[in-house]
Structures are given as structure tokens and as C-alpha cells.
Image (cartoon, rainbow, N blue to C red; front, side):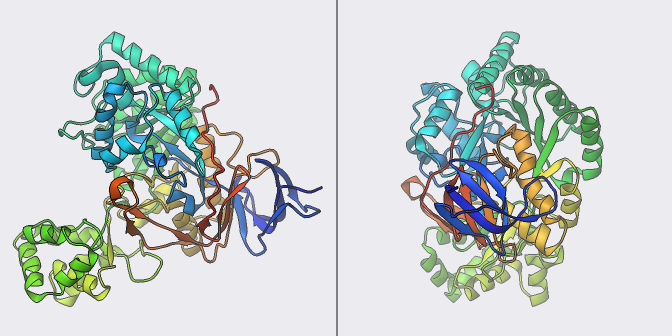
Amino acid sequence: MSHDLVIRGGTVVDGTGTEPFSADIAIDGDQIAAIGQVAGKGKQEIDADGLKVSPGFIDLHTHLDAQIGWDRKVTSVSWHGVTTALFGNCGVTFAPCKASDREFLAGMMETVEDIPKKAILHGLPWNWESYGGYLDALAALGPAINICGLVGHCATRFYVMGERAVEEPATDDEVRQIAELAGQSVKEGAVGFSTNRFPPHRLPDGRSIPGTFADRDELRAVAKEVGKQGGIMQTVSDFSDFDAEMDLIADEARMARGALFSSAAEVGTERMNERVMAMRNEGLNVTSVTVPRSGGGVGGLSTDNFFRTEAWNELRKLDLGGRVRAIRDPATRERLVAEVKAQGAAPVEGMKRWFYMGSDPRPCYTQDLSQNLAALAEAAGEHPVETWLRISDETDGKALFHMRGFNVNLDALAELITTDWAMPGLGDAGAHVSQMIDSGWSTFILSHWHRDSGLYSLSEAVRRVSAVPAGVLGLDDRGTLAIGKRADVNVFDIDRLEERMPEIVHDFPFGAPRFIQRAAGYHATVCNGTVVLRDDELTGEYGGRVLRNGAA
């Protein structure tokens, strides 16, 4: 029997957590047809001898809601084995949306997630009002990989309350309308509802986004309606009132199909573990997601993420070549240094969070905390700004520096991501596009936390980036490799697998900048039976679909 595609002779890591085994995998259409010794030659063949074969990876935390409008290839995550990406996190979405609200939602996304408003308004078709209409518009785009979405609290609340949604409490009738609209959106295909309770996420006018201070009973009402349609609740908390926020997450899990929340090692793994395990022991479906390395910004001369003084702001007006020439001019360099020194101790303290990412093709995210830029400067007898300039000069302006904002201590992070409930992810793909880039989180899990450090076995690493997130989203037809499952598959060389150094490109609408990050070691990625990547390069084939909640 001839199959459409045969992946032959690989070591299968099937996503269930069981030991890897040698087998061929046959694919017909968009489904896995056979696993074992496959006779006959496929219409297409992938030689996986010496390689690992896994399910496609599932990214539970992206903000690709806008980028999908002009980047059907869904980069950078599609370079890193991701075959399904979840949109609509953190409460910020573009649906439901009245025509009069488009400017508001686009402006909010710009200030919260650093996605240019002009690109959003011109790069999306905006031919929807309901959440189901939004998903229809995305399906018409034909993405390279699968996408699914959460409906956001901000859009839902603004749709019902208008301007009052930002700061005022909802009336009982408005709570009912918000909850019913959330439930209807899940019925139309959203996999759940997202809310953001973190006050620093702000509108262009400086006010916190709608829903930040909503009464917890409003969210309980939403969870009840979302749960009727089989949806989940996603929550971004600030944990200023830890017990109250954990109580809310537990109630959301009781009323909806499950609860997904964002975590960081700084919140305290021990106290989070105590609360979440109590929920799980109650039978509740509660999962967290956290970035599997120190999360934070990336800066360098090729970016605009560096010191802010008059001289440094003048540097921002130049292209990279002009910037390199400027820092090599003695008078300019002296002025750049002097203005930062004049700011006193603050820049030195700030540089204790910054780390040089190295000169190799693979960026270094794992330096000891003692290797921060301030410590390097002290050892060299320099001010940190002088060290920053020297390294930038020596690398012709290519040097990048990583700022550890959270999950700063990797030992504490390892404790968090080995709990039963905290899954690696939260790459924030599509957001903070000119400030940070963590889209390669899945590659980092396999290369660092499995191969380099041994924290995870290969089977466990793959399970945490495939089967577990599939279960969170209720995707019963993918996430593991089994006959009859959808053919979302990765073929990779575990010895070569790694991220490449981030780089700034100007491929957003109107030439807006963003970071991208490529990968090495991916032999092939298959999405719904279509080979969308070969030898680390996207093929130009588009196998993705919009995955809707089962109620739809």
C-alpha cells in the first residue's frame, strides 16, 4: 500500500512520556495511518535515520493575533517545531469588536504588547464583529500552522460597556451580558476566555486595561458561561493578594473546563505548589505556563533598547552603520559615557540584570548570575556603559544583551518547571516585537533542559510541549503520535538542535522593526500532513487550520 508520506527509520518520541522506540510513521491525508514497519514506498519520504520523531509542539501563550494578518508563515514559532499556536492571551483580543471600537483595541494592543497600531489597523481585514467572524477571517488567510484563540476580557467588556469598561464596575445586567457574550464566543469557536489582572498593562492614556480591576464575581459569572460551552479560563494575575487570586483560579477551574495561569519563580514555587496541588487533588484541571529561561528584553546597538540620554537618543536616529561609526568617534563616545555616568548608581544597578549573549551562532541564556554586565565591567575596571560600548565596538555593533526580568535564577526556575502543573512556554510570540524574543522556548527546552542539563528526559520534555498543552486546550486529535491522530509531526536532530542569535528585521507593515529568531536541527515539520519545514527552512506550504472549541 502506498501512503502519502512516510517518515522512515526514526526514533519515535510519541508524546505520552513512554520510552522512545524505533518505527516508521505513515501519513495519509491529514492523519497518521500507521506506526511500525511500513512496507512500500510513500509518495513522499522523509529519511529519519538517526533522528527523533515527535508530535508537533503546542504554544500556549502567543500574541500573534495581529501578525497573522501579514505573516501566514507564523514566524518565528514555526521555525521551532510549533504546529499549533494559541492566540488571545492576557485579555487583549480583536474580537468581539464593533466597527467603532477598532481604534481602541488596536491602540491597546500597541501599548500592552508593542505591536504597532498602524500595522494592526492596516494589516488585518477587520471584516468581523463576532468572535466566530474573527476566526472565519483567520481561516481565510490560510496559515502555515494551526491556530486557535481565547476571547479576551478587554474586548468583551468594552463591547458591552464602552468607555465605562476601563475603570467602572459592571452592573448586574452588564455582568450578565459580558458573561453571555463570552459564552457565545466560546460556542463560536474560542477555546476559552482570557483576563488580565496586572495593573502595569496599560492603555495609551496610562490607565490599566479593561477588566484589570473587575470584581472577581464578574469573572466567576464568565467562567460559568464559558464552562457551559467546554471552554477554559486563562488568567494573568499580579499576585499582590496571592490567596485571593489563587481562590479565583480555583473557582474558575470549578466552573469552566479548566484554568490556565501564568507563573514565575519569583512568586514562590513552594506556596504555588501547595495551592495548585490542593486544586488538583480536588480533581480540578489547573495548569500554569512560564517562560523556560529568564524572561526579559534584548538590547544592543542594532536595536533601540539601550540607554536614554540626549546623546543616546541622537544615536537612535542613525542606521546601524552610522551608530557603529558614532561610537568609534572619540568625542561622541566620551559624551555617551559621560551622560550615563551622570545618572549616578541607577545604570550600574540596572546592568546587574543584563548579560552578554555571546558571539557564537547560538545565544547564551544560561550564564551564572555573577556574569552580569556590571560584574564584567568591575573586573575590567570599567563603568558598565564602557563595557557595553567596548563589546558593541568589538562586534561591529552585532552584540546583543539579554535582560533578566523574571525567572532570573535558573535553579529556582528548574524547581518550578519540574512541578506537575507548571509547563514551559510563555514565549509571547508576536508581542513586544522590538523589545524581546522568546519564541524559541520549545527549542530551548529540548536543547538546554533536556540535552545539556538533563533536567528532563527526552520523553518528558516532549510530553510537556505536546501532549500536556493539547490536553489543556481539549485537542483530543493531536498532541501525541498515534494511529488516527492528526499528522502534526517534528523530525529533529537532538545533537544539533539549538536556537540562533536573535536579529532585528523590518518586515512588519510600514517597515516596523521586530526581532526574529531562527533554529538549527529541525529536519522537518509536518502540519496536518503537509510538510511546512525542511532543513530549518519553511517550504512555503500552508498546512495549518483554525482549530475551534468542540462546541463549535
